[in-house]
Length: 245
Image: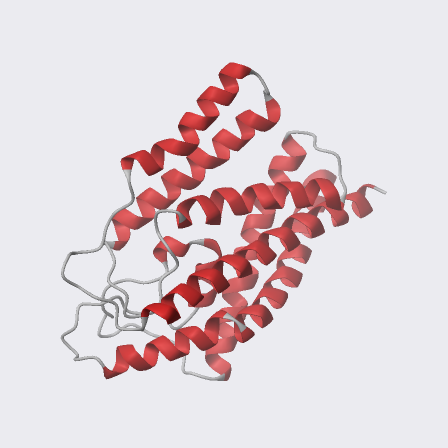
């Protein structure tokens, strides 16, 4: 029970810190790009079938789940936080919850596999998380601005989850087994989702925002995710070591 309480305490503490830091990073990085894209989306005809935007916590989902942050259209009665303080608070809450959830998973896996505590070990695991959850899926599904045409949300989510799981399994085989057969299986697992291919957007539709803005958003969202996972892993390892001491 003590071990479980320590795991939860460390994860919540890391989630609060990382969620707050990433909210600040997004405030200066991805949010201005999202706001700029929303200007083009608002100016488009109402009948346009381009991807809408979740005003509540889009920046948080860009960090963790790039494939599922936007969906076509808005429900007529869907709630969304107002621009300004309400929107920033919603993003902060979403970031803290997202960071806490991933911290629980990361710390639980490190504890279950008896990894040594320390920020270096945590950082290595955090970078592996970045590779599995962000980098690998981004090769097929880029983080998207509002007004970007996209495949149906369910298809993107299934492909994203499959890619993240397959990549994580491949990295685990490379890390724990380190044998020729394990390396071969790991490479197959990592490559398989990309061989199958990510869902594609309907033909004949163009993004509302300029291409340069979309490219910049992909870069900034990816770097933000790198900061997210590096902090998540490094702080998890550091606080686990302090708790053990």
